[in-house]
Image 1 (cartoon, helix red, strand yellow):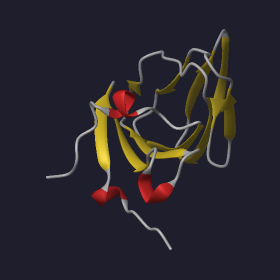
Image 2 (image 1 turned 90 degrees about the vertical axis):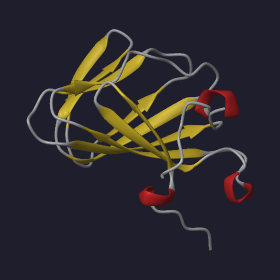
Image 3 (image 1 turned 180 degrees about the horizontal axis):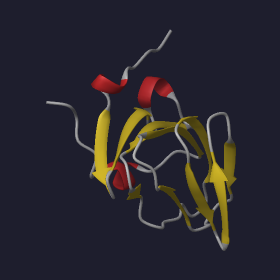
Length: 122
């Protein structure tokens, strides 16, 4: 069994949001999947970005926000899954005063160069 908690995970901060890399390429011999836990502070938005060649899914765990995928925008809340096609610009925005939390899965996983800015906990 392979287990990793967010307090043991590499992390990055951008746009008022903190991402924890629970599973990266090669972790526990995993080759085809990356998993992140993301906490979006109040009134935050991640930069619009894409992952060429990788599809990604977000699953909202707590809070409410607005998901932007390509030219579409939709309100999302707990239990909502959003599928993001490869190479599609996307971002999530938390317009509220409460923290928004989601889990993200990407396949194939992010390349090591893409996670080079992530930092291990002190």
